[in-house]
Length: 447
Image (cartoon, rainbow, N blue to C red; front, side, top):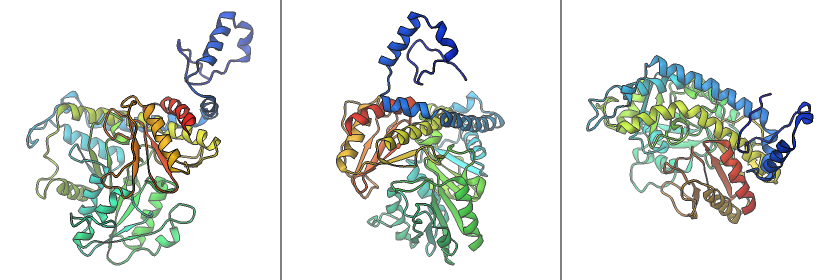
């Protein structure tokens, strides 16, 4: 057992050793008493943290494994400070950072190729470029994990895009394979789900705003095998948002043709100020890049300021650690909220497959109160009150609490939820699990 001594109160509960009792002086006893009085966490959080030591150690091992993989990729690409220099205009005089970053990212996720760019507005934008790379008029898109995330509904044409260029506007058909009763993939239905014109199968790794389990990479690999057995030419696109570095493998390693996501989520390490990525098979990455820019321009264009390029590299290197802290935060939220009788997804102490923790709060009032408590506990905008309202891309009223340094950076620490039954809040991020420990104290007072 490690014993860590700090001048200030430690985040972990104190476990005094019996052998040390006889040597404790009056002064040290008074310090322990002061520690107990001034502990930063409420008792429910202290109890939960005490029970999660072994789970946190497992997460630390995950962080070490993923950090090792990233470090080797950086070394093989010979990343140097010259790669942090930016470019202007067309970006043709870029100093090699763009190419090095793409190479590093592709190796880390087990892909042939990758494009990592500030010009992707969001994860939805990157996913859209990937889908339009695959699909042509008369093709069918099949969502195999139930309904996709709200912001993709207008992209697909499931919700009216008012003629602004959805897949449906371009003659692409769409179907869904509903989830099984247990919230997982419906394996039996999937075995016969493809039609002759099904060109692309979309797999959403994270739960989105659905009350379901997020998918493990093993499950994604099994789904890909079932899809390819029906039609080897059917392309598989994985929405990888919130899933990066939560496991030691990524979807391209189990057969995904493309993955896409956002850099202000997991792979940006909380410091990437913008951007997204597409990774996978080289031809299809180039096709997605053509959708981002234009056919013929390829991936060797587009300027990126130097401070952003440096943040991309540094954020990617830090991302396993930041993801690890976010996972610890989800474990803590689940433990505390379940102890108070709330339904949680995932359940306490089960393996995580994304960085999202959902909690059913049961009423609009409690959902608003939870988000307001998170906002009050944030380092930025703590004096503001989040207001539910309509947001571009969302069908329902949504409330967001995200007092973050990067606007919308869910990897820092945030929560949000649609104002509809079952009034679930979706929590994610956290640069250190102790921030969620502090936030939960405020939440418990509010609800």
